[in-house]
Image (cartoon, rainbow, N blue to C red; front, side):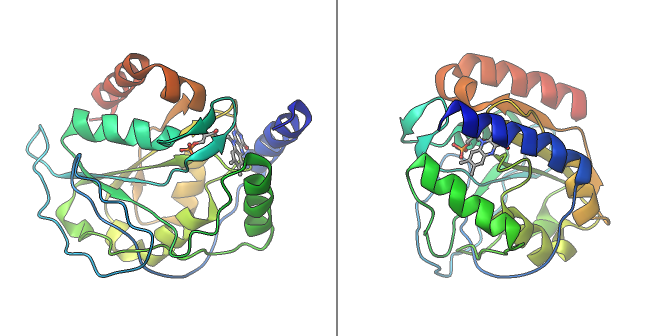
Length: 231
Ligand SMILES: Cc1cc2nc3c(=O)[nH]c(=O)nc-3n(C[C@H](O)[C@H](O)[C@H](O)COP(=O)(O)O)c2cc1C
């Protein structure tokens, strides 16, 4: 992406963080447990895994959305920045993993095209469908939810997840995390609180996408510090 585009994104981030805002509905997903993440591109019924007890005896789940392909500052990547953080977080907390995958993977793998598609989704307040079956959220006491920052906000497919699972998320403590290219958490916590008013939202974690891609030790250390603070 050009510097001008990034500048535009970051300015938008600040503006959107101040304005906030969220909203409504749609569809299916995909489950994996710990490191046994399954790749799946089409909606298909998935067996819900038995939740894994975490280190403190309570069960927790890491839900994440992440893209491969061309990403800002890291070139063409085979594992998404947020996916890297999510997997380390799951290891550190003994959590199950659930990846939000689009039901129809129409997201481009070139950066400039992807930001245009994401901008359009945001402008239309879209609710893109996801594939697979969300695990039974009642099994988990804590749910970590992470994604890249897209245009200063959660990608719209996360709003689909929040809204489709409002009942399951109610009464839970949700911990937002993100990877980004400079905007930090971008108000993910406040936006999550507004979208899931019946959940408790804990402190969030923001990690630069470039760090996620290049420095796993630093990511692990940040995750460990964060988990110590919040649990
Ligand atoms: C559509 C789109 C919009 C983005 N908007 C922002 C933004 O507003 N602020 C920011 O810091 N980074 C922004 N980025 C950069 C991503 O948040 C960052 O590269 C992230 O680590 C990508 O994570 P992923 O590989 O898990 O998808 C954007 C990237 C894309 C593709």
